[in-house]
Image (tube, rainbow, N blue to C red):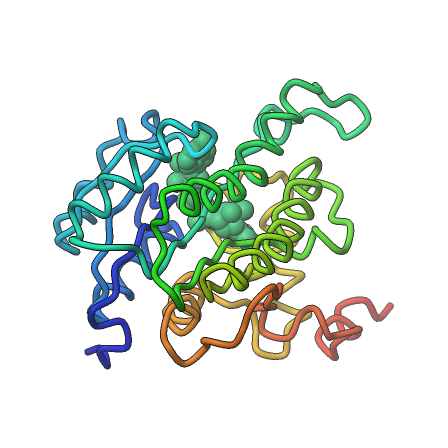
Length: 270
Ligand SMILES: NC(=O)c1ccc[n+]([C@@H]2O[C@H](COP(=O)([O-])OP(=O)(O)OC[C@H]3O[C@@H](n4cnc5c(N)ncnc54)[C@H](O)[C@@H]3O)[C@@H](O)[C@H]2O)c1
């Protein structure tokens, strides 16, 4: 049972692939809070057909868009405004993909065409989304735009490979566009740096189970789940966070501020 935190608000949610996706959980949580939205994903991901289940549960329409295509994004924002009957109040960018990670290329032998794809899909697409919204004047004043990041933007996690650079780009774009959109339309732009989460993108990183367990041990509250993340995103879309912008918000159970824990000391004792 929701609290109508997002009553009357309209949005676009990118990146719901299946029921494990952070975007999937967010769509359900936003729906519960009274928000209305369109769902979108890359045409190839939509072929799985799963998203239609979610669309039905949320009363949402699905609009295909490759987040690297400006033409697709223009169509997405234009159609979303038509379907929802007005300008947009919230956008979730929940997109990540690295061909180098997917194909297990070592960091010292990256394929640079793939590297550029990683940056485009997982980083630059965030700029494209906001530039499209600005050009179409698609955002309402006091709107909220959120993208999902990971702490590998600040600290090295070897298997995260070129996704670390993509997340650094993403977080930097949030600051630069956050400044611009704040001045232009009082729209806020933030990234949420989420704990390791068992999703298709997450478990695609080799050694994921080990760093999931490590982060669990290193976080006083434990790892934040996808459902926890969805609830945080709801708050970021609500009017209770109107003055928060240009931030990378840690949503990690305390991981990023912890040096070591008793659990790890016990584990490492000889
Ligand atoms: N799972 C984790 O451990 C974790 C931790 C921190 C941050 N994140 C971030 O959360 C976000 C969501 O990932 P998730 O964990 O829910 O996994 P997921 O695999 O469910 O979602 C990733 C989504 O990106 C979409 N996508 C890929 N290429 C695209 C393109 N060209 N255009 C449009 N969409 C495209 C996929 O279709 C998929 O829906 C990503 O930014 C990811 O990096 C995940």
